[in-house]
Amino acid sequence: MDKQEKPNTATLLRKGLRELAMHRPDRAIGTLRLAVEAIPPSCSDDLSHALYWLSVALLRLDKRELAIKSLASAQKLRRRGHARSVYLRNVNEYGMPKQPTPELDDFYAFMNIQLAAYLAKKPRNRFDSNQERELVLKMLLDAWKSLKSGSLLDGHDCGEKLVLFRRLRPSFPNFGLGAERRVVIRASFGMGQASAGASSRCVCGSGLPYTQCCGRISSIGEL
Image 1 (cartoon, rainbow, N blue to C red):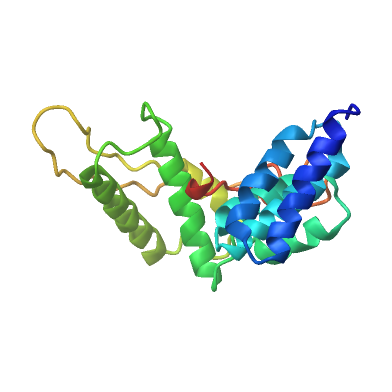
Image 2 (spheres, rainbow, N blue to C red; image 1 turned 120 degrees about the vertical axis):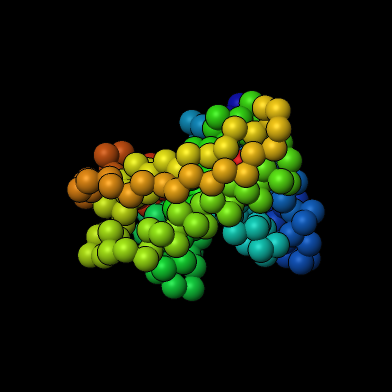
């Protein structure tokens, strides 16, 4: 940082920490985000420190998905520190917020992968209507029930399940083109054998599994 920039970011960080100390995380978030934006990537320790405290403010407001996103960035910048230990306590093997059961971990990973793939094809990465959203969610829930009713996931680890989840592509109705369509096409689950490569150590050298590091599943709430 140059001489003008450093006091500014330090002041922003101190102000954010004061807000946290006074139990005002809603106010702290805005200030800490400004601090994060002001710190150049070359100052990795300072940036990691600011991202960590931003995640604390987000966790206090129960914004777990955004907190995990902040923690993921913080612990990658500084691989030995409090940010990593907090990150690992709060994420599951998919790098997403930890759920009460492994079955729910699988469910949320599946849903977020499918929703992200669907919304990526939309002009603004958003549903056009509540009707579209409800129908897409219903189809995905039906696909999940069909997947769970068989034995396709039995005995597979996280990396193998991710391959299966990504290969599955339900056929959705074509929204916004003339008359309303309520055709629900069942997804095919003949996906072949999965690969376990995604469970190996991340190539970035973090020491974490790929699925908890560069290959973690981003939650829809992070968008």
